[in-house]
Length: 249
View (cartoon, rainbow, N blue to C red):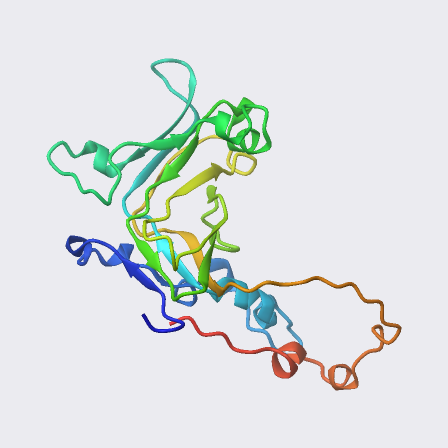
């Protein structure tokens, strides 16, 4: 494969389902960012912050491959108990299945993350009793030799009812799909019943070249001096003087 080319591979019979295809992150900016006023003299906004723009547009987005219904800490009228459940559209299809689309919920027991009292278990559910749910990803991701991928929840997005657990995978060697355990955002959404639609971005994929690094600490008495080139500009200083455009096509 070509250098700086990332491949997303799945079964041929999923080709016609347009809304589950991965896309560059730049193609799906969050609505709050779109609604923000333009950055200009007299009205400085976050749209002029290139570090934030780079975070929003770096890499690629994976989308939910099927509808996912979540019942979270929601009172069940029949049992009178609060329940946590994750169900997928394919579960309801008695006569339809696909090897790349999960039919049954999958999860990790809390024992794998340190037990009910552990940080992750406590973040995921009240009293830490609920297993860590997982989304099966139908895409195998391939990168050139020496390149890995950082997997993150989509950065600064409104759809934050749950967040995948971040991870780094050496996708030049790993020839299987990467699946995604996720944690509920219980502090912001303590109780709800909701269907997350097929096509909703839920993973940000950022490829990078593996390199060894060595840290050093330095104290420089000249560090506090303001660069005159920076100081004599009012707007877009970082963008015009230091920023480099990144491309993810």
